[in-house]
Image 1 (cartoon, one colour):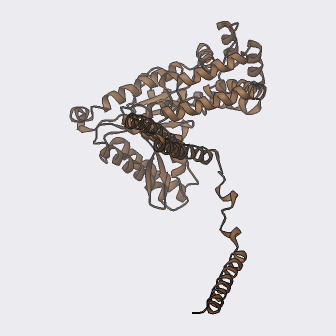
Image 2 (tube, one colour):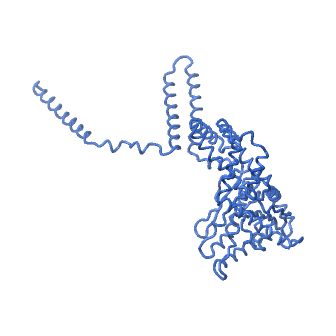
Image 3 (cartoon, helix red, strand yellow):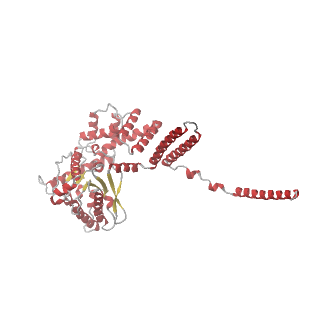
Length: 485
């Protein structure tokens, strides 16, 4: 091939290659790369949990990347030992970060449930599904202690409940030694709204010796014909299932809140009244154990005792009027609510608590707690606004403690109290104003008057069924000392 032919070939090749290059460049220029670049809004964390997860994950990947870089650069006689040391440190750090990531992605309720499973502590809440369906859903056990429910009327109920629980653990002995092999271990609590009935029930449900199960009676009433009646049976069948699945080693405490809801009456001959009569008949059977419901302890609560018939009352081993507080008990309750979690000035004396308790005469426990709510919602916003940096630090510490332990404890309450004490304490004048301001509120005055009515009705009912020294309904009860004028 001549030199001229070679030049022509090279020029042709170069021209051809340039055309390909130009064509490729044009294709690249026309490509919409914006459509394949991730939008920052799509990857930006939407909440705190996502943000903490991204931060921990980035730290984990960065730790692994930096360690690999360090390992590739280590040389010398002791290289193997040094690499092993660094690798071990990285693995341990990686395990810690992975655990932190897991905790961030795990809600506090899930962590509490995990601890409950380890402790074999069971608590359930009733859930009504589609028509014809009812079941129990596992929930974290309530964080309530029996000693936090104050009052001599509660002491009677506590003793009765402890007697039931302690004997319920030995269900086989109790059943075989009972007349007709039927053990009646039911309790009815009568008290006004806010007196502490629910807190007592939650405390019992948190006891490891029982399986706690709570049902709001109002949620079981439906507009569908006879479904409310069927729901009564379904509740007890579901509770029996919990008992059987627990290998019949723990009694089921079945808490029925708003128990009077099953006994409301409509016009004579109406479907509502017919259903209510059928509900009453079913309750008579299940409370008597006729459907083999041994192992289930019914703990019913009401603030309308006049709606419950004598036949139903007779099925309860105990009927206790709870929440009646004498002056000293109201003083003790106010002190407990205040001094457990808030910094009270050392100049506040026992006599001050007694004066405030006398002002709160006839008030149920909920009203006493609302006094502390008034003080709390004045102190905390003031503290958060005045000391924002310290408040954020305290919140972070509590967040870490909760993630590590699964639940905040009395130790953490004391920690917050001490931090608030560094800011300021609560004076006697502040407490007096909170009591006076609360008693001026119409809803509070109405709540106190309603409590009086409930206790009066409860006293009349118990006196009537006691039969002046006899007990025709077979209810085991102690003498009730009413504090009403």
